[in-house]
Length: 118
Image (cartoon, rainbow, N blue to C red):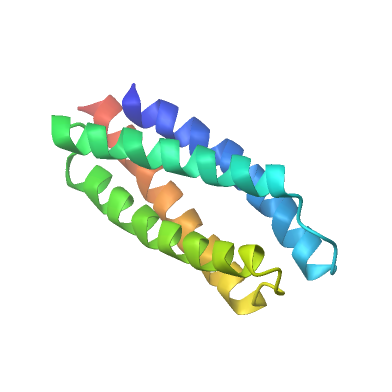
């Protein structure tokens, strides 16, 4: 159940991330509450994945998903630094952050699938 809740949180966070990416690419200002919600959803999902890993839920695939999503979170923190400095977010970093997060999310879905079949 932890993995499923984490996946839901990541999916909701991804929607906010998509809106922020579109705004950034069109030159619009990214709303601070949206950025905060995106980060909060991602961080909460990560905490649930850490708890799941400590409990042994999700197996190796779940731990791989956690590792990949931690890398995505580092990219998110880097992007946050641009937000705080009121500088334009580097498009390449936005794309890499999103791709790594999608890979982590798909890995998490695989872990959920494997857990359900076990």
